[in-house]
Amino acid sequence: MEVFFLAAAITVGIAIILTLYRTVYGPDEWNRLAGLNVVGTKAVVLMVLIGFIFGRPSLFVDIALLYGLLNFMVVLFIAIYLVRKQKA
Image: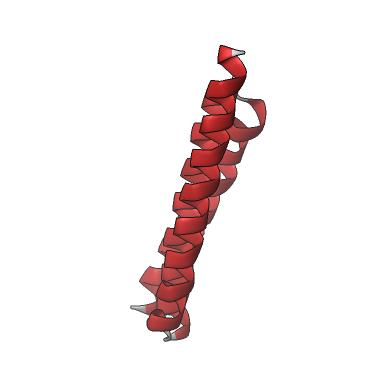
């Protein structure tokens, strides 16, 4: 079962790297913001998978939940900033 979690973690890591391309070279700031949100979400999944690999899922799930909340708040604040910047 550990091999399955390791393969899933590698796949999610590759998906994060591919999504970073959209985040860095997106056509506009909204696509970059969406890419940033997707990278954060995949990082949460990667943390949970790493927790299962090391046999301590409860610890890593707590960290992943905190990181997911932080990611949501940052993306929300950036979106509010972009909306206010467009109105001005």
